[in-house]
Length: 211
Ligand SMILES: Cc1cc2nc3c(=O)[nH]c(=O)nc-3n(C[C@H](O)[C@H](O)[C@H](O)COP(=O)(O)O)c2cc1C
Image (cartoon, rainbow, N blue to C red; front, side):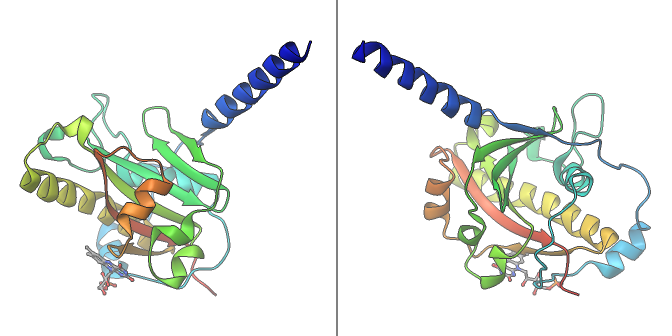
């Protein structure tokens, strides 16, 4: 009898853990038209470090992630280029209710952790206040690059295109954003449970500016 109760508890715990690991947020369709004219967005692009505590509406989050790294053509190509079209970048999103992975093909966020790890995504005080801290991660299993110079150069370059897309989207939407290189990478990678061949490149805080 005791054995059966133990087994049942283990199964229940296992199911709960699986349910949490598989939790996804289906994003609304991104808004892929309109916005500020490009030349004006370029005029207004800037780094802002003042964030209010206001959360990003899901439609804004969806459009932001689509701008960063969404699929914009039927053949699966993206809004940002990547070296040899390896598409090795992953965008993780740290918010108050957890850490998520953006899955562009399904237009969804997969919950990776239930914890608020925003403060650990950077070394400056404001990172814990931003509604979303994006963490750019190069997955070397996708790229296949082995040469350390290729890894550094291509993953760094590829990240920059995503980050600039986010800057321009934020300029257009009146959001505050700042890209950040100051990250305790080994600690953050451990917290995010990344594999050794997943490399954190940059992070970018996004949110509504303080009024
Ligand atoms: C690769 C890179 C790393 C950066 N790292 C940080 C950072 O860790 N913290 C920060 O507050 N700003 C960081 N910035 C933002 C720069 O400070 C900012 O772009 C610069 O001051 C120019 O301001 P602007 O973006 O408004 O033109 C970084 C920018 C780049 C391109």
